[in-house]
Length: 101
Image (cartoon, rainbow, N blue to C red):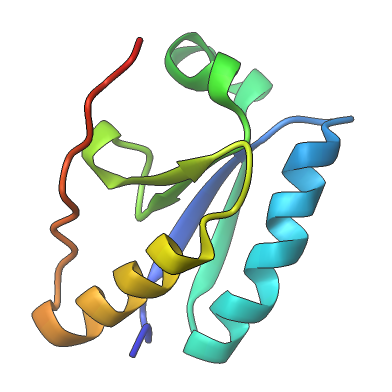
């Protein structure tokens, strides 16, 4: 599973949590054949306004509230569940969580 899946990681320069999340995600994505798009949140004002306080933030596909997998630290269980879900369903339908903005 996972082929054709793309994760989006909102990242920030000089952010050690961002680097740690990317380092933790790389082997999982590689094993699943998924790709990782690393986006500098500070280069995109629209993303920075919404997600800037939560960086790093990992999404399945493009940044969208319903597709957030985790923030600050990698939640490997959710990442793996998302990969399994994409393999069986074809599109990810992640349960939405309360939005604490």
